[in-house]
Image 1 (cartoon, one colour):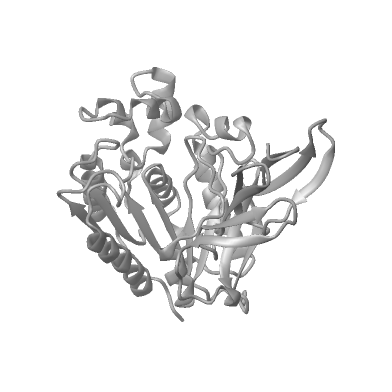
Image 2 (cartoon, one colour):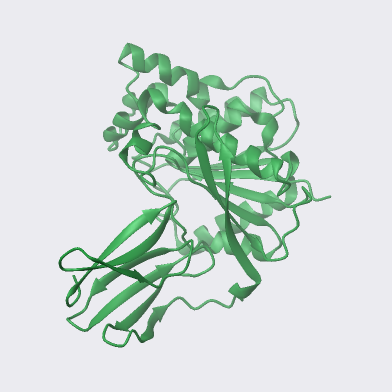
Amino acid sequence: MIGDRIYATYMRDASNRILMFGLDGSPLGELDVPDLATASVRADGDRTATLTLESFTLPEASYRIDMSTGDRTLEQSAWLEWDTRRYSVERVYGRSRDGTRVPVFVVGRKDLRRDGRNQVLLFGYGGFVAPQKPRFSALAAAWIEAGGVFASAVLRGGSEFGEGWHQDGMLANKQHVFDDFIAAGEALIADGTTSKGRLAIMGTSNGGLLVGAALTQRPDLFGAVLCGFPDVDILRFNQHTRNNNMPALLEYGDAAVLDQFEAIRRFSPLQNVKAARYPAVMIWSGDLDTRVPPLAARKFTASLQAASTSGRPIILRYFEKGGHATNNGLPFLTRVDLAASELAFLRMHLDSH
């Protein structure tokens, strides 16, 4: 509540709208926020509020609003030497194997040509009720500034369309998440945004499981893969002795339970590596990771190296003092180096002509 109004933040197709209501519930319109953005508002008093906005092309910024006049004053924003007017965000849709519509945000230059020649980096997560709303990423910004296209898929397992959407991507339904992600990649190829040799995928943690499963199920679909701190041995996840993430079994399933074991063994990436022409793959992990077993990343790397018939590189970056995710135990300059190596890896191994 701010003054004599109620401000309600809604999520529609994975982006936010803020609706206004009187104290009796009568609708009073919307607070003006950009399309395809993440937004929130909080009261600072009876007459002022703070509006926070973020999108794929806008780093998080906060505005002070005079609620009596509607005037906005920029209070805080990240400094960015980047002309966001050159870029646009749109939403396209794929169709998953069971017919479910899969939204995909596509970020690139306004003069983007759909001739199949763009190098595309597709990101996904799909799990743990975590919504993948429009967020600014310095790595994505660098990628599109260099001429690439960044895409973010809205997958089952998150909360973008309610609890049913979440449950349709967990336990026995976990394969739906991978089907959604594959469908997102296929949609970007079908509409001419990219082609198989120019499509890369990226995910970390639960997103590492996502790209690991997509990689082993459809190695033909991608030109390069970035797989960070991944959950890739789900059959043995419940045996990870340093694991402080046992609630993840409520999402993935517990291999000690027979019917859950049967579902897990069909998608667990490590157990589904087979001889194939795998794309170029970069995996990274940290020896101090207590959320997912770092041993699994090492085994997954070795298994892919032994099974791949493509001759393309499959490498592991292993941080002896790193924990789970790049902001856990890795110095800032190491994180910068990792991001630079990720982008260089993509440029080297995706088709360019």
